[in-house]
Length: 426
Image 1 (cartoon, one colour):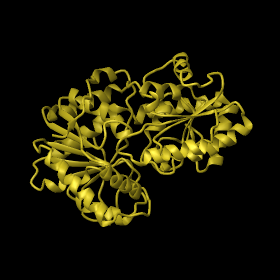
Image 2: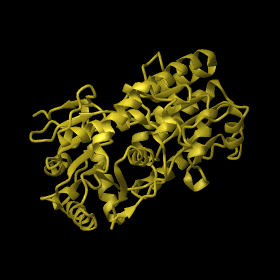
Image 3: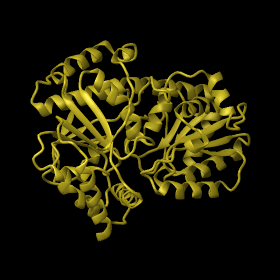
Image 4: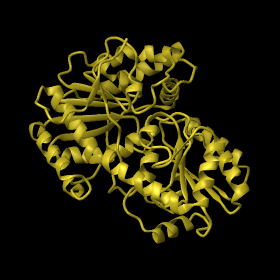
């Protein structure tokens, strides 16, 4: 059997003061015909990255809504994760393709993991490319299979996408963050379009006082009376931590007291993470005001929360981004947020109204300088950002979207509770 993730317990009732009454009633109505249905989520890792963050809330809330839901982690060795990282990069535009050996490794691990999956559920939800090909080993499955792509597919390496398309065509539905991510190919399943969401009650996003946040970041050597810029993300070239350091150095010319924290996590399905972590450390060149921290420094959810709450500005200078929950979270915490004008980030930030969108280290630095010069105006922009997140990017809405999809796949009536769906285009 594949490893089962213990997600604990969460109650829908706890979100009643955050979500609207209409949304909570809609969730209960949609959940009723699904009571007792069995759902299995499959992903590559139980920590690090947006998929894990989402599932630790989504799965227990599905359970509380009456569905028998579990989350299982596929098995893989370093050779497998080297291949899946290459696939991940290629789907986000890296020109390097897959050779025959890499394709054989990918196929072999799909078969090995399929042997350990019991096909006795109503829905199988497959997250991202790592377990994508498992469906090929269940030609007679009675379950409805759904593939959820969490990355930016807007400009994929076509040879790698073509390699995966036969598997994608087997699914009953696919989900993408944006319409622009739907592959331009024939024979694909209906593509549902909805963004992910954050859990406002999770330790990473719960209310944290300024005093508590300052106390926590002080434990990591941060000078709490000096301004702090923070980026929270994996150590990954797509997140551009080196560009963030360039921006910080430009800001420091105007605000010499400024500090920078690069806060990440090291996930076992990201073999490039250590290489890029080391590149980032080398690029910082011993600057005592640059703090490069990870879960290996005892950075957990509460610590991430504290760094974001304490920061004068939170950055996410991505050059590719499927959605970017690391943007959603600081917006929810009313922090001035500066982010790359890419992918799903542009659906979260209205440039000049709720945050800052930038295209270069220079623009990023100018935004940070503007925030440090006029923190009162920056806070007004951040307050508007929080309200936008409240309306669009919190977990109850995400649960509702899943319930709509499950009902549609079963042929149940979902009138009045639609989600965006597009047909694949040729």
